[in-house]
Length: 400
Image (cartoon, rainbow, N blue to C red; front, side):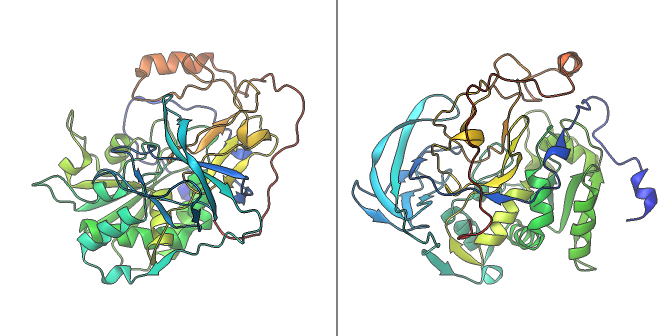
């Protein structure tokens, strides 16, 4: 990348969108950190799109980290795995991010356990047939980490009569504050490229386009340096603009094509995967292992902002006091975290409630601009209540 690239106008989806104050400098240069395992974990059976998983364990049963504890409830579903070694306390109703309570497997973590992943089945994934890769992806419990939590194996199988010729890898992360995907592209580059090759083989795509916003040119440079010459994988910088990370917008920016009204990317011969999803795929599928938590974001007025890999496992929910368990109104609460949720911001939301997420698809562009003009440049202070000690973060210990 030359100096002229810094002034080059990069492709975008055209008119519309907004340019929010990013606040990414709070965490962009901070490496991903680990949080410790809490004493108790809640693993909801319904936290992905599709049918909920069916439990395989009973109260009192001991489980090891990575062991299947629930099976997929159908094709559009994924299994659950023990996020830590411990004993099943029971199956009870637990709040979900969507609101209604759903059944969750409760595990009391063995504090003296090493928490190594003990459930493992090595495979030569690139020697598998495409349908075998799809089955392995489902067995690992992988879902999309871009926010929708849609089972990844389903996206690898296009609708009847459709074929996939282009794999689009979404590394935009256009929302303010969030830098999880940025850190993944910098710290887990090799795993990401392995995951891309696995997805490319499973879908039969002839080419791969990685779209990264131009506020992350260091990630663009690093990805290009790791891709061998002649390989059908290219990295393209796109304009930093919200909602550039929406798959319809990114396809327009990279391919100049629009998805038909009510259609899917497969209608254009395209499959879209988030960089976090593919990095996990590249880490897990050299052997069939339980899916584990990718990086989550803590930013805004948090005491310790940064990308975190909770010791609770990828889908687990637990009570984390201090920054990681504090809602926007400043109170410590037990919280549920679904797959695909990457950010917790210490500021007020855009549309109504403080903790209610704002979506580009739910707000007309003229209203989005009007709302954005009313937002302050800095996070608003919240009533944090009495000072409490921040989360204990450690850099060593068993890998997540």
